[in-house]
Amino acid sequence: MLDSVKSMIHPTSIIEDGATIAPGVKIGPFCTVGKDVVLAEGVELVSHVTVAGRTRLEEGVKLFPFCTVGLEPQDLKYKGEETETIIGPRTQIREHASIHRGTITGSGVTRIGADCLLMATVHVAHDCVLGDGVIISNNVALGGHVEVGDRAVIGGNAALLQFTRVGAGAMVGGLTGVTRDVIPYARVFGTRAELLGLNLIGLKRRGVDKTGLAEVNAAYKFLFTGPGVFAERVVQVAELYKGNALVDEILAFIATPSKHGILTNVAGGEA
Image 1 (tube, one colour):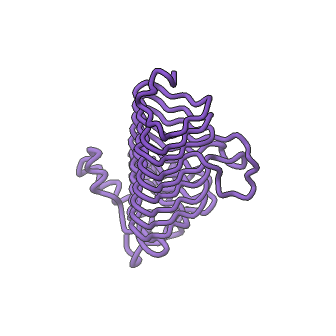
Image 2: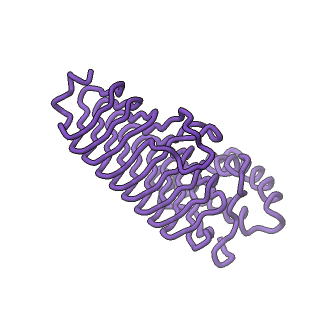
Image 3: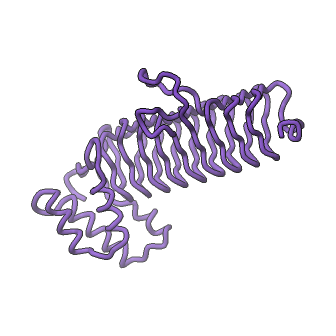
């Protein structure tokens, strides 16, 4: 198979025996592809790219200069076990980004979904899971085991503590430190993240109408600024907004076991 696409591989690149290279793959100058790597149809390595370990790049993935995918994790417990990295279709990984393989103390897989954009110098640590359509801006650092939901956006220079979760459609502002889980569709910002409200623009783009926006926003405000303790408000919101799919999604996220708990701090004390 490698011979059939040889004309698409720059002569300065090194492809180890055993690598699987599909038709239509483009490999530019000074790239290194390991023996256990699978490059699906239409993958492009622009130049100076390293792909190692048991790594699969799905159709149309594009890696830009000096990014590395599938190298050993920065985890002192890692002893060379065979773990994996999977990058979903059409995802773009920009310059100097680093994505490390999973560990046996985690899921064993670092996984990035389809149609994501990881900008320059992003670091995705071992066992992270990113959904589809995620956008991560320059210089963001994701600690090990971080989970980011579909269509979430993370601003430049943000840092996410290991084992934290960011829900679908959430927006994390630039320079924000995330140490607790961010509910779906929330907007957060701050040296230590605080809630700014919901990502209403993102919800509008998803096609949520005015009635739906008003209802989910009211549920959010009651959850985070209503009377009583948070756990009691969760129960009340589940009853008050029963059947609302967006509210159900937020409540399901809250109910999922968490290492660090849910972010409940509201900027300025108001939702």
